[in-house]
Amino acid sequence: MSEGIHISLKAEEIFRIGLPGGGFPVTNSLILSTFALLVIAGIALALRRRISLVPGKIQNALESIIDAVLGLMDNVLGSRQKSEKYLPLVATIFLFILTSNWLGILPGIGSIVVRGEETAPLLRSPASDLNFTLALAIITVFTVNVLGIIAIGFVSHAKKFLNFQSPIAFFVGILEFISELAKLISFSFRLFGNVFAGEILLTIVAFLVPYVVPLPFLFLEIFVGFIQAFVFAMLALVFTAMATVEHEESH
Image 1 (cartoon, rainbow, N blue to C red):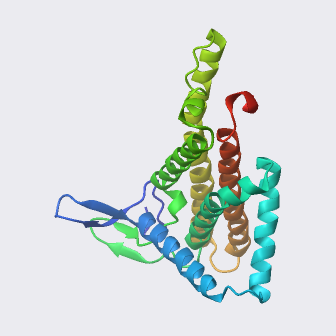
Image 2: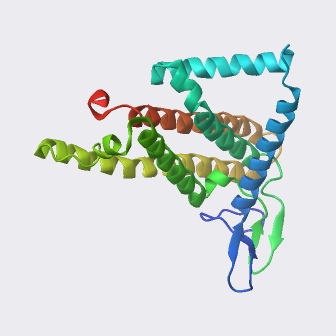
């Protein structure tokens, strides 16, 4: 493959933490996802210091956005109390994926390369690594189930999957369990597929026709990055709403 274009399905290992030949591999997607986390944390700390009882323009705008998000969550959860309770989870998922997606399409992200046994970009969009999206899916589904246990109790939550009251109830429980596994696939492959395809598109277009032509595709990927973060967060919200109601109420 030409050195001017680099496409790899898996994230490339940049270095290892630990003993030679072992230790923890650090990939280019992990580096950028860590940077995304630091960016979000830095902005959060900076905004926290600016919070005041008399809000300025920025605080007013952020409060309006949060109020709109809570209104959207009210429509799904049916309660402002629940919306405020689960806002941190939904907002964190959205902001983390959005920041990761947008950082991944910044000009120059893929052009900084390291040369070892193989030439590889130093940074890579986190969501273009299936390990990242699968890990995010596992964490999300696990958290949703923990919230369900906290909300309705372990026994009530377990009855959604193990119900011996009747053959039909038992079969429905099996379907519920299969649906949990399907959520992992849905979460991870949807995000991975869209972001990885967009990364390939930008790479090829920038290689074949550089400068002006890739700009429309770049703006398209900005929009796609937002939509994918929104869809992931909304699915997490819907699954949380389903997990935090009693079995009889959710059917």
